[in-house]
Amino acid sequence: MSDEWWREKIPKGEQVLWFGHPHSGFFPPHLGWSYRILIGAVSLAWLASPWFANTVRDFWKLISCTGALAFVMWADRFVRSQRVYVVTSQNAWQINKEFKPKELEINRFLNFRTVPSAVVFARHPFFRFDHLSDPDAALAALTQAREAQT
Image (cartoon, rainbow, N blue to C red; front, side, top):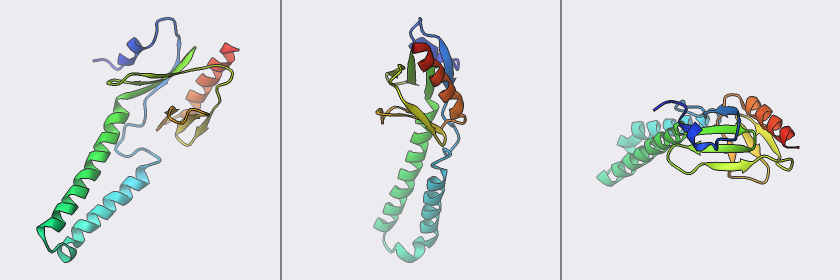
């Protein structure tokens, strides 16, 4: 499958102004410090386990916490790898390979701003472009689309 799988989910009449993928590394930029702290805490717990884990039940707790952390890190990276953000002449899109794409109509009442590595839309808390390497390019495309609508 090509890297342009998301184009088939965009209606034919819309012109693509910008598209971007979230950061695809192991640690997203603004959450990397929390992942590193959790990995350090679990590593320290494994190193200290001979002194506080007296029974098999205590080891099961440690194994479950380690497995849960590994699963959360894998799931976060998997979800980010399946997502594309697109700005067209009429809409902003969050497109996922497996799920229904989300769209937000761009009009003169739509307000948006950048925060570190993301574009946030006012009055739309569950629609945002997260983990971007260049949020200013997305902001420029959104501004261009909004100006074209007025």
